[in-house]
Amino acid sequence: MIGESAFSRRGVLLAAATVPFVAACTPEPPPPPPPDVLEDLVGAALSDAALATAVGATETAAARTEHADRLRAEIERATPRVPGSTPPPSPPPSVAPPAGGTRETLVTSLQAAQKQAGDLAVTVGSHRVGLVASVAAGCASLVEALS
Image (cartoon, rainbow, N blue to C red; front, side, top):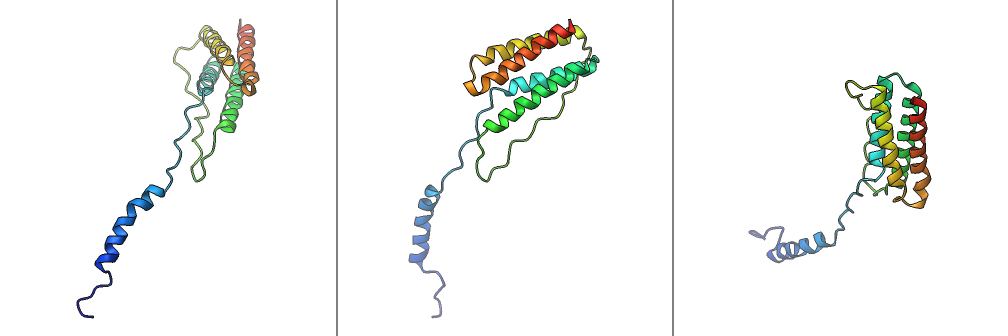
């Protein structure tokens, strides 16, 4: 038994030959889902909330924060969870207000958000259209309240 090793040449060759087959049979994790179409609306709502806070429109800030929260909840509900993966990070709770913001800037931003949500409402599925249309209508109401 002197000179014999614990591994035979045949055993080593067999192990080396089976490694590619085992690796090929291991399933790859599915790719992450694409960004949700509502993400842009969340960003706009958070930006508007920060601007509204900066110009002293607290009710508008609260309404736009609520829009962001509701949209984020829908995104999280609709995002498929891959077993063993970590959930996507939550966005920052607020966005820094732009420098030199005014009520007119806020109105313009709300009008842009209203158009963005209105345009998106006709493209989303029927289970989301009510939420997106509500955001558009809410923006229109906020514009009227600020004017």
